[in-house]
Length: 446
Image (cartoon, rainbow, N blue to C red; front, top):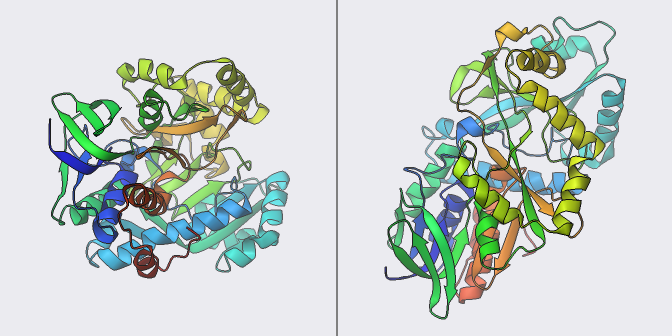
């Protein structure tokens, strides 16, 4: 048995590493250990290949309520402040870059919805966002959105030059590099957690080759967080819908991010076009939406774990039925099933999705990105029989389990703050919330 640690963090994605960073900077914990089964941080959902690389600030996320939009804006600013505070100017472009972005409405119905959103509290929350309703003005900022489009097709956009794209792998790496500078903050890679057991002496974390003892555990392992929570008897009214996504690449045809209008309350993002922070020569289109019975994309061994974490009972079955047969959700799933068919899929994807953003692109202009796209765990609230929108933290007697669907990585430092407050309170340790708030110019009622 390894020595007794104060906290063990399981999973070195962006939330886990952000939590370790926050503990190292602002808490009185002296012994924190990170366990990660891969060889490096953020190689799954936080990897730049597996997400849209967007800092979701609420300007273009039309599926968010106004209340969630306000919250998302505040949380996103933590990442911007972190880059200013902790990263050297020459390091920042590898982690975060400013870029233009827009929400694009195509057709009368979408334009009416977007106009209504703009005329609400939205324009007060985002005074720097410009409404563009003239084609000639839209063409100036994003030429290929207009080029080749029918003259009678209604277009309207909400546009800002103050967006950001983020390499969440490099952000995670910077969190870890800073955290491990503090004595007593260590990490072990290439070690897979098999089980977590609560004992009178603390939590025993069993890996593939060793056992560790800790006063508290923080599980930030994506969809596996719920799996471990349920093993310990927590999260009984929750399930997870694993949604896998793929991306297509084209040559660079967009200057910035172009998001489509989405239905409020649906966590599946509509297909959008993005620059790639790791490759300025391409534009990415995606993600597709494929429901998959696995906790990690491409890992068939995770299927039994998915079934176990789903914990199928009558409430779960009724929840899945209500969610999957929702008119909008079922339409999204049907369309994306077609997109996965070789040959036909790319043609359909181009016509139905990509051409709504860039009308001039043809199927032969797109290439399916190999080994790109991850699992986005969507939490099912089996009590209310609906999908939960946003991050979910499950608390349990000194254990904390974090599942982070949309906006996911954007909220990493806000989730880290909440995680630290819980762990400090449970273990009767200090977390300097006032200093955290001051350093990040962040206000909270916590």
